[in-house]
Structure formats: C-alpha cells, structure tokens
Image (cartoon, rainbow, N blue to C red; front, side):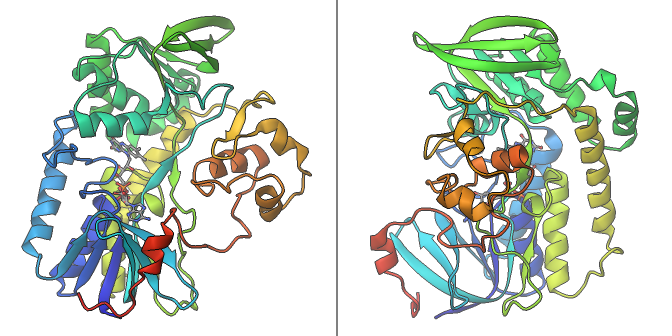
Length: 425
Ligand SMILES: Cc1cc2nc3c(=O)[nH]c(=O)nc-3n(C[C@H](O)[C@H](O)[C@H](O)COP(=O)(O)OP(=O)(O)OC[C@H]3O[C@@H](n4cnc5c(N)ncnc54)[C@H](O)[C@@H]3O)c2cc1C
C-alpha cells in the first residue's frame, strides 16, 4: 500500500487551508474531496467548473482566491483527488476511499490525518417537511451556486439563523426574491444578546448587506414566525404558518427550511489518545464557527501536526474565540423554545419513521435500540440528517454508544471488490 504523509479529508476552506499550510512546510499531502471541485459549502463552484456567479461578500471571494493560489503553488506536494469519498477507517487502521471516477475503493496508510468534513444542516420537523418542494436552505443554495438559476415560482424561506437572509438575498439578486423570510427567533426580546452581538466584532457589515438587499426587493423578514405544516397543493405546497397568535396559509412552489448547522460527525473517526494514526478535526466539522474561522482552524490543525502551535497561544486561537463569541451571541439572540412535533411528523425520511414511532420506544432506549428496534438512522443517510433531530427530541445523541462504522456513505459492492491495497499508481 502506498504511503502518504498527511491525509486531509474535505476540500472546503478548512481542509484547503490545512493542506496548503502542510505543503508549504514541505510535507506531501493527499487532499480528498467528494465533490468534483474544491470549495466546500461556501465556495461551491458552478457545475461547469467555472466560478459561481452567485453573489458572495468580496472578503470571502478574496480569501478563496488566495487559498487556491497557495494550493496551486504547491502542486508538487499536494495530490488532490476530487469525486473521491472518504469511507472511514477499517478494522486494520487503513483509511478507505471510494474513487467515483474509476469505480474502485482504495486504501491509504497516512502518518496523520486532518478531517475537515464540514457541517450538516439541522431542521425542526413539522408535518410535511419531507414532501417534494420542501428543501433545505443549504440544498437550495448549492443548486443556485451550481446552476446559477434560482428555483422558479414563489418561494418561502423559514427556520432560523444567518443562512436564511444570506440565501434570500442571493435569490433576490438572482432574480427570484422569496415571498417572505420567517425567522423563528425574536431577537428584539433579547436586548442583552443583541448588544453582545453588536460588540462581538462579527460580520455585522455582511448582515447589513443582506438586510439592505431584502429591503430593496421588498422581502418581508418576519421574526417569531414558524411553519406549522405543509401539504401538497396542485403543483406546489400549501404552507400553514404562525406568527405570534396569528395563523395563515401561504401557497408557494418551494419551501426552504433551515434551523442551523452542526458538525458533521456521523461515522467520522474522532481523535483518540491511543490511535496509531493521529487524527485531528478542523473547521465546521470540529466546531461550526463559519467561513473565516474555518480558514484559521484548518491552519491551526496543520500547525499542531507540525508541532508549531501551542494550545491557547497561537494567534489563530484569538480569531477562533472571536468567532465563538459571535456565534454564542447569535445563538442567544435567535433562541427559541423547541415545539413538540405532531405524532405523524416524519423524523427519519429514509425509513419513513414518525415521531409517534419514536415515542413508542422506551424513554431510556439506548442509541442502539433506537436504531435496531425503532429503525431510525438505518437508511442511506445513516442518521446524518435524522440523528440531530432525534438527539434534540430525546436529549442525547443517537450515536453516543456506537463506534464509527464504515462505510460512511453507500458504496457499490463492485467498487469494494476492486479494493486495491497494493496500488502503485
Ligand atoms: C449548506 C451550507 C451552506 C453554507 N453557506 C454559507 C454561506 O453562504 N456563507 C457563509 O459565510 N457560510 C456558509 N456556511 C457555513 C460554512 O459551513 C462555513 O462558512 C465554511 O464553509 C466551513 O468550512 P469547512 O471547510 O469547515 O467545511 P465545508 O466548507 O463544508 O467543507 C467540507 C468539505 O468536505 C467534503 N466532505 C465531507 N464529507 C466528505 C467525505 N466523507 N469524503 C470526502 N469529502 C467530504 C465536502 O464535500 C466539503 O467540500 C454554510 C454551511 C452549510 C452547511
């Protein structure tokens, strides 16, 4: 099996920053990305390989241009493999990858690994969230970035967090502003958190630019509003909403939902003191702090491997703490109490399991029982999407007692059968 020095999983800002820093220090790096291009969640490129024209703040564009230039300058030390999925670590400590171009699985034995697999979106479920026409805000943003076209017809954006106004402003600039943005939180009721937010040094200018775009396109931004249910309606959706005590129904073609992001940890091997290969997490996959922090965190993980950063003193730590303060203040400002879903609400879309099915399980059911008896988290997403919902509803993680298992993603038997451990390519 071919040896690689350092493995970096994830070609977003954190993984690219880690790979560039390691290569600049002279180490050979294997950078693995499942998509066909680097960029991650924020710098997703258009499907044709050209730079996406979807509007992004200039600061982010500059950061990405600088980072890709550093990677290009180090091509002799960074092997970039796109369309390649990190599947996990097998029982013998080999890191396994599914190369979707060649249709075969290959293995590598790195000296160390940095896993920067980003974040996943969370939603708060309601009856009908699983219907065609309902999509996550991040999913819609990926489509917009890849195709350059917004979804056609009336769009409602609902949930909570900064991605709501960000995508809504991008949709407006792309020619289809949403009919409304419903933010679940009520920040004006949290004056202390708002004051902390203003003083946190976070990207307030970016938020103001989104607000100005929404105002220019007359998009109503309603706080304290929630979606109560969605039902099919001719070629669209009938969406029940509640703002304060007032209930109404909107007819839209698309409902885009989002309630924050969480580190993508499902099946990811975590750092362990007794591991034969040191593993570090970086970026949103370690702590969801946003794009600027992801750049710093990737660099910090690389410096830690190089032995050049002492915890608590690296300048990157200050940037991370600022991002953490901002995210904490934002979470407080937008805080809202969870609402119990109706019994028929689908929780696990892969296996069609409802909130009533979840309640049928004993209160003290273990993560394993929730999986095996409840059949939650057993489908194609392996709990990546329903896991956070179940954790929020039951107050503990779905995977708490399950060790990371591979494959992280479905892989064809043919590709596995072609597993090459002696490849010399
Ligand atoms: C859907 C979504 C949209 C967002 N949009 C914005 C935005 O518009 N503006 C903003 O400021 N912030 C946005 N964010 C926040 C964003 O997460 C950070 O700003 C930043 O992109 C985090 O960088 P990262 O490198 O840690 O993770 P990411 O940018 O998410 O990169 C992780 C990379 O790892 C790859 N990966 C994951 N698993 C595997 C695997 N098993 N094998 C191989 N590759 C894998 C992914 O394909 C991805 O390219 C968004 C987050 C999400 C989840």
